[in-house]
Every structure is written in C-alpha cells, then in structure tokens.
Image (cartoon, rainbow, N blue to C red; front, side, top):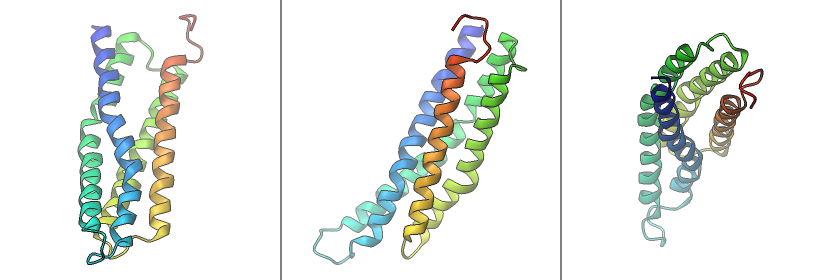
Length: 157
C-alpha cells in the first residue's frame, strides 16, 4: 500500500505542480505582450492572441492548483504509512509546501487576475509575478531535494 501511495503522491506532484510552474513562468511574458502591441497595429492581431494565451495560462494555474491538493493529501498518507510524519525533513517539506501554496493562492493567482483585467500591465506587476513565480519554483525544487535526500534518513541515501 505504501508503494501505491508514494506512486500517486509523486505522479500528482509531477502532473499538478509541473504545469503550474511552466504556465506561471510563461504568464508575465504574454501578459506584457497584450499591451505592447497596438490592437490595430500592423502586427496582424498579436494582442488578441497574447491575451488569449495569458488567459489560458491563468486557467491552467487555477485548475491545476485545485488538482495540486492531491499532492499533500497523498504525501501525508504516505508519510503516515512510512511512520515519518515527525521527521525534520518531512516537516520542513510540509512548511515549504504550505509557503508555496500560499504564494500561489495569495500572490501569483491574484496578480495574474489583476494583469488580465488591467488596461496596461505595469513593469512592476510583471516583475513581481516573475519573481514570485521564481520563488514558487525554487520552493518546489527544495521540496523535491528534501524528498530525495531525506536528511537524517537511515536508508543509507
């Protein structure tokens, strides 16, 4: 049963967090492009295309954030099955996951919504979204390393 729980946990992490990381990273570029190209300019309708891409990227982030709830659910189930819920590496991973989730829900998604509804995406909003997405991705990279290395583990890894 532990192997099944761990497999579902890892698959959920890959299939949920990966798309969010990519879509959130691409979003600022397309949000900026919406306002940089004049709608009636000779560019052949690039503004509506950029707006559409930005909207789809935001929907991907929103939708996969809901699916991403499976990651900690199966993570806790796996941790309980392995008897490691009190290990420091797991507690650190849980805290970093909570910080990443809060960043997504309270900063990145609202920032994307603001960018989609703004008349012009400011360079400060774009930079804030890019920076916060970078922090979000870095937090997940640290969680992955903690899950693999497991400091203090007795498995010899």
